[in-house]
View 1 (spheres, rainbow, N blue to C red):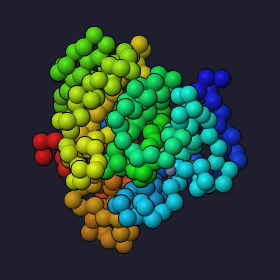
View 2 (tube, rainbow, N blue to C red):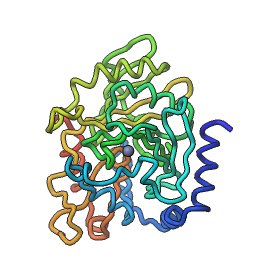
View 3 (cartoon, rainbow, N blue to C red):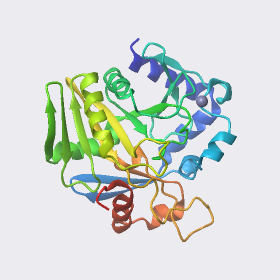
View 4 (cartoon, rainbow, N blue to C red):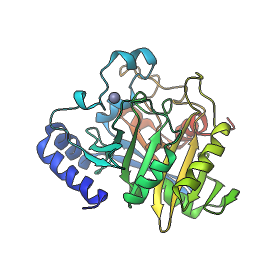
Length: 303
Ligand SMILES: [Zn+2]
């Protein structure tokens, strides 16, 4: 079996064997959604109360240090199994709190901080091996709920409207090398830089060149703020880099009883066009103007 077949078999095994996974994947079948047209990009809001655990997660240093790391083998849910990949440097797990009908976490075998340096090539390789999936990375200050343990995630590419929008919209070339091209997407509701690379090296080089231009973090300990998504396209891997001036919009609240704010916490999936709304009230009152504000505040460098 190749890696893609192995993780899909793992998915079947896990939903049969682990109750929390069976329940949470089954609950996805009834998920309500609302579509908003930001031509050329569709934005889909989904009501998913099980994601409150992630959207309202506290990611400050003290909270992270005080809790057991849920990606380390010793602290995983009972029955959770994994498939090794990339020369056993990573392992693929089924996400117990899914957004899509297939949703994986690809965790480093080491407990090491979420940081992209030296890992873009790994994402490129994973995207190649997992054709049909998008491998994505949430920066430590941009949606990762385990900023202390390096990990990526993988979901079906067809679920993310960003890729179709990038096919339809103009890409302004910025840097062209023999094995990789970087361009800027025009006319989307978010800022997106695109790296098309036929080699892992090319992707790594262009991302390294881009890093100094991404929004700096509020703490020098952390790398710049961005989300990074990668998917295989014919002979190359396309990567989308979304710069993130802020992690959460100004009206964000993590308090379930506070109706003056919204619990919306954009990470890679959201910036790729699927806004995860864990609270009913927010899902119902979401409108085009609010989505524009969320994107302008969290995904536009110019604002
Ligand atoms: Zn860990």
